[in-house]
Image 1 (cartoon, chains in turn blue, cyan):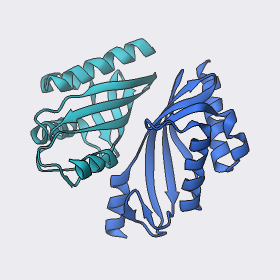
Image 2: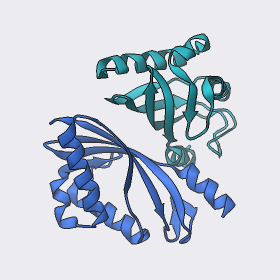
Image 3: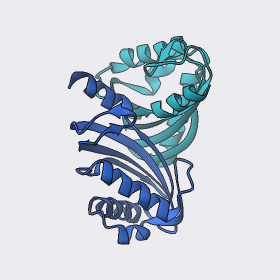
Image 4: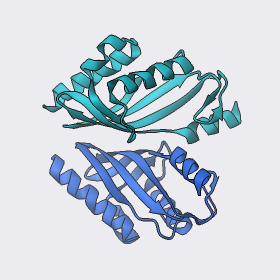
Length: 131
Length: 131
């Protein structure tokens, strides 16, 4: 798969998440998907995302930087949102915070099969200290 | 610059860090380098790295995944090391921990000019809870 096609698929995946269109998630996520070493499969991956949106009703994925090198995509995602209760082990309690996620994806057969994600907990900590 | 050349330069940069060969850092890092939005310049970038090695004498950078899409490089770096005292705000105190960094670099004139880095603090927290 070429770079432009992979970028198009990735943008389609992000649109799917933002629309919470879980019926279409299987177009982008492989049946055998792993996330940070956890063998979620498509159903576990969907459950993780549904849980994220439950905890963060105003969750929205924004692509800040996209690096494509088939079969890999690296993306920096920016978030501005208001997680309920504890988030990343921090008492965010609905306050609005901004943070990023640096995340790598491996694609197989045009679908995400492996994900390595790190969310910027330090950024959230710094904001809570000044809110 | 093509993908293979950028990958070669990046491997040279990592070798330079692991050798702590600060005289050569200017071959890889731009005079106007920024790191997570901080306008460090080459001298500030070097000071950050020297400080890292002071705090973590057994620090070694290991490339786990490299995604090249000129002028960008995305790298997942794996660490197995023993930071002294507090590290990422956690009382690591010389215990050996394993964690990753997902980091993006923008290159200009063959040198790193902008860096967006996130270190996996949650991974360190989980290990301290079980050590």
